[in-house]
Amino acid sequence: MTSTVRLIGLTGVALPIFFGLTPFPESAGIVPGITWAAVFYAAVSMAGVAFFGGWALLANTLAVTALIASPVVFAGGLISWLLAILGGTTPGTAGSVHGAHYVRLALNMLSVIPVALALVVSIPFDRLEQKLLRRPRGIAMVEKYLLMFVRVFNHIVYFVIPNLLEVMREEALLRNLSANPFARPESRGLFNWGHRLLAGLIHVGVSGICASLRFIPLWAREIDDLPERPPQ
Image 1 (cartoon, helix red, strand yellow):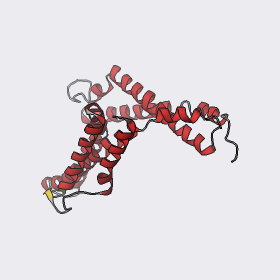
Image 2 (cartoon, rainbow, N blue to C red; image 1 turned 90 degrees about the horizontal axis):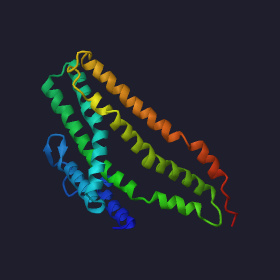
Image 3 (cartoon, rainbow, N blue to C red; image 1 turned 180 degrees about the vertical axis):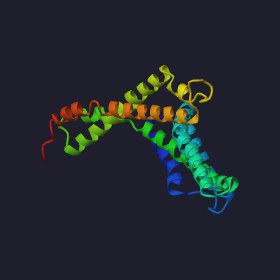
Image 4 (cartoon, helix red, strand yellow; image 1 turned 45 degrees about the vertical axis):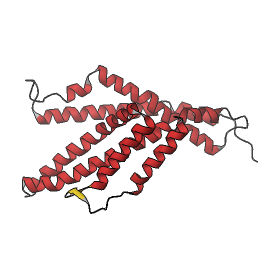
């Protein structure tokens, strides 16, 4: 399947998700707060990515979705539940109210993130960069901006993210952070585990930002020195 066909197909899959088109009425719910439409969007998203991109792409996009959704859904749900209890709400009521909200949030992420990632992967940024660089008549100012965006995007996707994942795997960062906080005697409980988790995530985020910005001044100088297209 060519990149163009894949891009068109994934765009068609994304349209009902982004515009809210569903055969189910908004009032049709599985349980209070969770509708059949949310399940429909998630199913269409995953089926479309698997059909047009393959099972490997679906597995990769679901893995990224899990990494993004897990702290948002579980940590956010826990914090909201604790705050509701501290405010005087009973645990059962707090769980039913906030639980439905975060389950709906997880379904929304399963709907949007996989198809959005598949759309981005399907765009041939590498060929676009080569096409811009090989234009014999020069490059317009708008094309220079586009070339800078494409180069930074390729650098993040194909260099920064793989290197970060490799370093995290070699240093067993996620395994150390997700270990039982009460399993080792030197650990000081849940607060210490949360502090180590937050510090590790901040370290990964700062490392990714620094690596992404590393070559921008050099690329900006190189792209600015490219011959400009003469006025028509």
